[in-house]
Image (cartoon, rainbow, N blue to C red; front, top):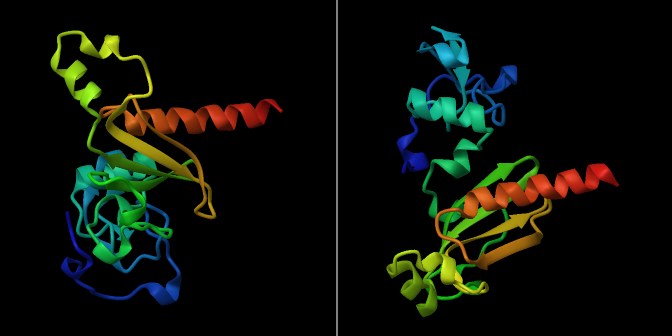
Length: 180
């Protein structure tokens, strides 16, 4: 992970209000001379302070997945969350892994200490299929609206699928609203 102190400040483009050509979230702070075919950068692009130090593969990921580079790729102890976040509000052993925007919602992905039943079934061959539901798994997520209010959460029956499950839940919510 990077820290903001690792991002050197160079020539300011702020007065021109040019948006970063990768994330399109922050004002560009420097002109870069990369060739990234997948992003159609042919030796000249404008990048924000968060995208500039990242490698080409990461820039492609930010652009393609519409990630916020500030929250997806930097380890800022004072900026762990875009909204109010208190680690003490969560069970011991629960750690926020990442927070990112997806289709106008914020997803917080967590790692957590699974319950004993989850551990037991994970150790057995095909044990996952024996779970009854409601067991606290290895991962969990929260979905927040644009005001930072938690509108959905799931802490059960998940390993490393928390992000996919959260994105599927948002897609379902959007589709349900469109049908109304």
